[in-house]
Amino acid sequence: MDQEQIQSVQGTEDLLPGQWALWTKLYGTARRLFERYGYGEIRTPVFEDTRLFVKGTGETTEIVEKQMYSIPTGEDESITLRPEGTPPVIRSYLEHGLHKQRPFQKLYYVGPMFRRERPQKGRLRQFHQLGVEAIGSSNPLLDAETIVLAVAVFHELGLSDFEVRLNTIGCAECRGRLRAEMRRALEPRLSELCDDCRRRIDRNVFRVLDCNNEGCRAIVVELPTVAAGVCSECAEHYSRVKAALDAAGVEYAEDPFLVRGLDYYTRTVYEVRHRGIGARDAICGGGRYDGLVELLGGPPTPSLGFAIGAESTILAMESEQGGAPDEDARVQAFVVCFEDEARQSCFELLHELRAAGVSADMDYEGRSAKAQMRTANRLGAKICLLVGRDELEQGTVTVRDMTESEQRTVPRAEAVAAARCRVEPNPTT
Image 1 (cartoon, rainbow, N blue to C red):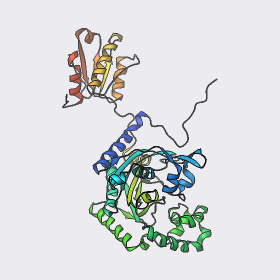
Image 2 (image 1 turned 120 degrees about the horizontal axis):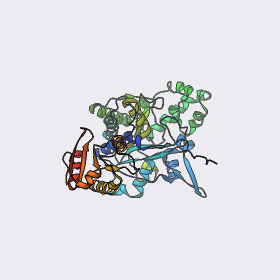
Image 3 (image 1 turned 180 degrees about the vertical axis):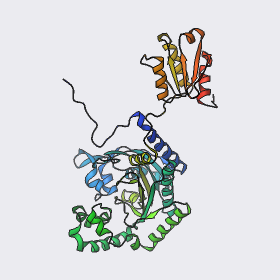
C-alpha cells in the first residue's frame, strides 16, 4: 500500500537549486549596497515574545489582529514567529545597549517573516524581507537617504518599471488633532464603511485610509488629506525630504492617502510600487517611526527604515527580465572519468582543484563520458579535465576549454595550475 505523500504547508514554497539565480542577485546586490551606505548586518531570532509585536507593531494593525502565528508558552505568555523585522531590531538595539555605546546606529537585516494571510502570487505565509533601520536621528536627509538607497537597489537589479510614492502623516502631536478631525468627518458616513473600518474608527482611525474596500476608498478620497493638516515643523521636515530627493535626482509621486499599515509610523512614509506584478504591487515600504524606541522602553530616539519584499521583487525582476535561468552556473571545472580504474585518480584531482580555490565536481553515477560532458555543460563548467587509460599510463590530464572547444594535454602535476589559468585569468597563489 502506497504511503501518503506529505506536501509543503499552504503559503510556503520550496526554492530549488535552479531557482536561486535571481535570489542570489537580489541578496548580493542588497547587501553590497546596504554596506556601501554604512549599514551593518544584524540577525535576530525568528520568534519573539508576543508582547513585542502587540506593543511595537500595534494591536490595531491587521498583522496583530489577524495574521500572527503565536504559540502559548505558559499562563498568559506566548511567543510569535516574527511578522516583520523592525520591532526585533529595536528590541535588540535596546537589550544589548547599542544606544549607550553609540546612539546613532545604521543596521540591516535579511530573513524570513511569517503572517497568516491568504496566499497568492508574491504573497506567502512564510516570506522574506531585506530591510534597513537608521536609529537615532531626526535629520530629513536621512529620510531621503533611505529612499535613495532603496531606489539604488532596484536600479542595480536592472528594474525600471517602478514608482516611489511619498507622503507625510505628521508627528505624535499633530496626529492627535488630525485623528479627531478625521473621526468627525467620518461619523456621518459610518454606516457606509466596511465592518473593519467601523471598528477602527475609535481604535486607529488612520487605518481607514489604508482600507482596500471600494466603498471605503470612495469616502476616503473626499476627506481632507493628512499632509495638508500637519504642523509647521512636520511640513518643513517633509519639504526638506523632497528637496533632498530632488537634488539626488530621485523621481517620486506624492500620495496624500498613503499611510502604511503599521501603527508606529510618523512623518515620512513611502512605498516603491512596481507596475508589472499586479494589484499587490508594493515591492518596498518604509518610513519614520520616531516613537517606537521609547514605546519599547528606550529613551526618545527618532528612527526610520524600510523593508524590501524579496518575493515581490523577484516577480518584478521576472516581469522585466524574463524567468530565472533553468540552472545557475555552479562549477568552474568538471573532472570527466573515462575508465572505472581512473575514478580514484579523478577524485584526488577533484580534491586538489577545490583546495586550490576552483569550484569543481565529478560524476558519481558511473555514467558514460558523453553524459558527463553534458552534465558539465549544464552546470556551466568552463573547463573539463579528462582522465582515461592513456592519461593514467602517461601521467597526464587533458584540459578541455568548453567555450573554445579546444583542448591540450598537460603533465598531471601541472593540471591544477592549468585549470586555474583557464578559469581565473590572473590566478594568485
